[in-house]
Length: 169
Image 1 (tube, rainbow, N blue to C red):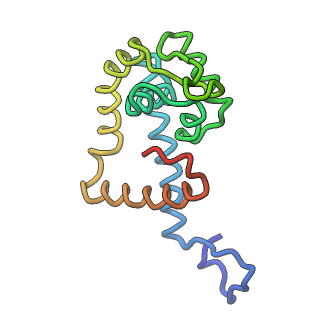
Image 2 (cartoon, rainbow, N blue to C red):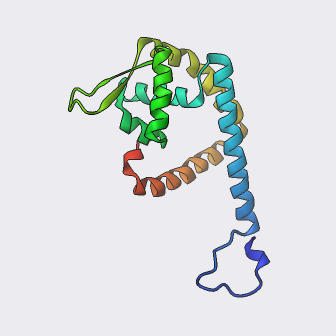
């Protein structure tokens, strides 16, 4: 339902329906995001045997100096701890990461980037960046890309306010 569909005044309990332009933008965002993430995942799997989540874990570890607590990694990826634990276990079996007890408190678990994982990231990064360029960056005007960044920063700011542990931009 759009705002144009309702000819009567809106009551206080009435939803604030999207108008036609807002609805179109929302649906384009949903479909575009889904298709883009699917393309990134397909290309990484085909070219490097990595899922997009595997790649993101390697990136996050690399950017954090080679290691992160599992809880922080899960929060930064906005995934459940169990999902990240399962993924990290699979990556550990492939030799891309290793897990160890936290030297700080002995309770937490640290995920560490291995030499093999760092090498995989170095190998996969150029083709990943090319996929991002071909599927997003090179399709829009630079000003539109900057505007998209501002829009998504506003979304992140709002949603991270409820979950500050997810802040790892």
